[in-house]
Length: 250
Image 1: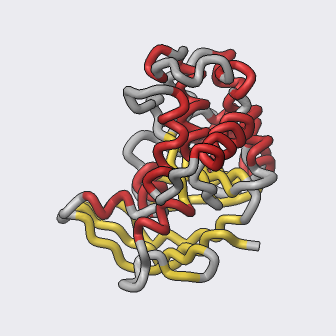
Image 2: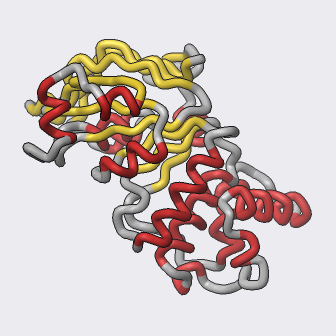
């Protein structure tokens, strides 16, 4: 079953045509990876899926982006509700300058949850789901900015999970982390896909191959190839894909 259906999507920043006729079906409970050289449109498409591009006044979008069959760019769409359903984890860990507990409770409080018992339950579940409860359960009142980079990123994942999304978007979530922390995040992503749909941008092709079910290769704002990950890496159908994954350019 498809979670997102993207149809004839074109995106312009002023006169710059950043995304060109994108057509993708993104499956539910899968990890989908976007790969390609810098500036090819990967992160732009990711931000289109939760309407983060709305923040850019020069941005103009044509086409359809359907989430569970509903057009997220319809005038009827509640953008706040959309961003509850579609969480985002950024490249650089970005915990709020507050306690571990308050970082995770921030979203639920914003959505009106005030009871301490309920917040405690949400915080514990989110930290458990992010595989960091055992490390932080005795440090909930500590400032989140004092955690290691890998812990901060898993805390940011917990913060995204706390509002009970359907989809988690990840924009190069391990590029600022050491190999051990990267391995923990990758293991976590594979575990989370049982309950969530995950879409990740990565420059690390080995990572895309390790963790994703499907991979889309982008070049100059276009999707050149979109295929089951193993097939795309083993026998790409487009010469440009083959050249990119073999290191000829990028």
